[in-house]
Amino acid sequence: MPTTEFLDQLRQIVGASHVLAEGDLTAYEQDWRKRVHGKALAVVRPGNTAEVAAVVKACTAAQVQIVPQGGNTGLSVGSTPDDSGTQVVLSLTRMNQVRHIDRDNLSFTMDAGCILQNLQDVADKEGLLFPLSLAAEGSCTIGGNLGTNAGGTQVVRYGNTRDLCLGLEVVTPQGEIWDGLKGLRKDNTGYDLRNLFIGSEGTLGIITGATMKLFPQPAAQLTAWAAVPSMEAAVRLLGLSHQHLGAGLTGFEVMGQFALSLVIKHMPQLRVPFAGLADAPPYYVLLENADSESEQHARERFEHLLELAFEDGCVLDAVVAESIAQAHELWHIRESIPLAQAEEGLNIKHDISIAASRIPAFVEHADAVLQREIPGVRLVNFGHLGDGNLHYNVQVPEGEDGKQFLRDKEGLVNHLVYEAVAAFDGSFSAEHGVGALKVDKLEKYQSPVALQMMHAIKNALDPQGIMNPGVVLAKS
Image 1 (cartoon, rainbow, N blue to C red):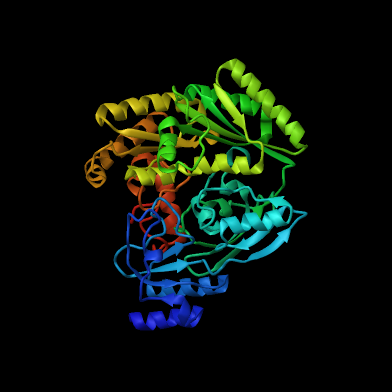
Image 2: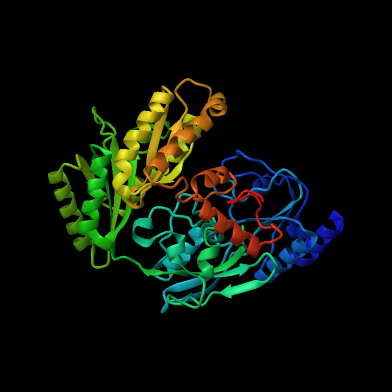
């Protein structure tokens, strides 16, 4: 089918104003970190599930490949078109309505294009909690969160996006609609199709709707910032927190001293606790406790935990936020690390997971290897220690040209880090997904049997290979 005729067909489906084929399409064609810039045949913005299905059928008939896209905030180049100018970017941002709230079932159903922060606000207005929270929540969409099985800061208590999902609505590569939005917590009727699509990054179908869990709002929420003498001490503090806070432990973040020094340097308006210490400790922990009873009960448990931590020696000093505003300030410091990194210059990011018990040994090993092989390298280590997820990033040595360093050393840095991760039985992708960026890493580090099953699933559901080709799996 000629291109003009095909585009006219798409315009008839979604409306002429929602098929973008000319002008500046950078917002859709460039990845979040601005490292990859593709060229789309068109950006198509359907307004409902029926339109998505019709667009997919048209693309299937014309053998046009589809790149599903939500907020385009991914960090693994999983929603960026290639540079061929032949792919359609299917943007779901117009599909942004909450369809239903079921208070008695503690669930709500929404379009896939709903922005995460808006969903948090909807839940809050109902006096309920939607706990999924991550740095890009003001821009990312729930469909993208599901497509990548996003994690965030409260996984230690509530799990990844997968754990919060009760059902999906999906358009298949053939343009059929699967309605799995029942909102059931128990449904053992054959293969778990919901979990097949979660984390598939748009390679098996297009998530158009979801039913997600809600929770009662906690009666109290307390946040503490603790200086710790080592990564081993941070892990001991994590164990004490599990023991004495139980399910009340909702967040447990670790931050290396160098990571925070970048925040102090580039964002001096932020008041980092204990920043003025002459002998700064190597690590800091940000932990959060939510309590269903009362603030007094929460504070008593929190203070008891910190007393035990001081006695154990795993905490050198600590401060507990006295207000919600102070708690937000502490979290803002943690969330500012990536921005401070960017201000410092180019860097190499890693989103890895290791069993929490093995993280101290991993960090000691990986630090030593990198510093031996690349003298002067600076390590920005922070992340979600509570669930074993580190953002183990590498900053260009001070004074060196960033672009040249990435050209010369990025491959070596990634090799050293991922080999260390594999040696400690970890994962090279904890919450950011594989995307197109790490396809070669999946081929190398995933087992041949697992890859064979993945390719079989892809070929069975998407035999034409039109759904996000080259993402997750190498093109066959």
